[in-house]
Length: 364
Image 1 (cartoon, rainbow, N blue to C red):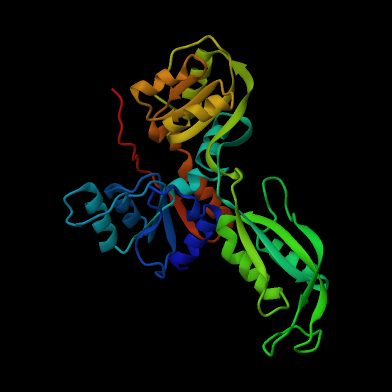
Image 2: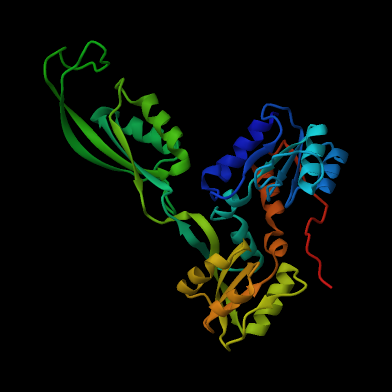
């Protein structure tokens, strides 16, 4: 199997289109066309992880965090990044990073942490805008069913809890064919009227190329009349964080004990107790201080994240319990999430979890 076959499966799940602008995702090291028989899945790519990949005879490392985050001007082996990349190159090991592309998946990093905490009715905490597009196309009425079926198969009309959704309206069109036209009805250079349907379907931004191909493949006209418009609606299927409910409400101390147990945290930094019971919980894996306002706006009683700074804790304003569980701890279940997906989609492909502890933070 070639590496690009594996990355294609990953990108269908967590499209790179939805990664944050600051991020560096996708294939960072290696040849897309190289053969791969086994992949090693890890939270971070370090020298020790590359050594593990060598021992396990893995040609690909699938990492949550990117080892190359900002631009590299030199590869001399004088930094941990340089040494890791050089070792991977020397041993023909490719490195793929998924990071915020998976963070923005509705069943991604934060959702997985929510499952570990037993949260019910989870939804995206911060839905993204500008990720939905609308197709407006004109189709001869006797081709409508065929075109709609093709578009649905390509993913159009699937939004949130709805599948195969479309809207159509009867139209009458008038045209004059030229010599290149493929339209069968009507005489050349004579005005012709025909019955058409105007189709409207919403689809995800990353599906645009597939939608256009599906339309052109079955439409009877040589030049298809269509337009694609951006919809500035919130997309409940794409965005950062997760928001859900505990099965039973808890007092604050009880809740933090529960979090420590279920997330296997050695300690939790938190804001001042305000005496409120915890029922609604917001989560954002990794550095999530930017989502404090969103958690409060959703009416969360607690917000679990990582990397909060001193002044961030004042933002609780005695309205919400802020809990910093640690960066690694908030993302520790991600490698199992990736492995589970690949195993389901590619049952004959070997992928193994790294046994290296890559958390750079230790507690005394």
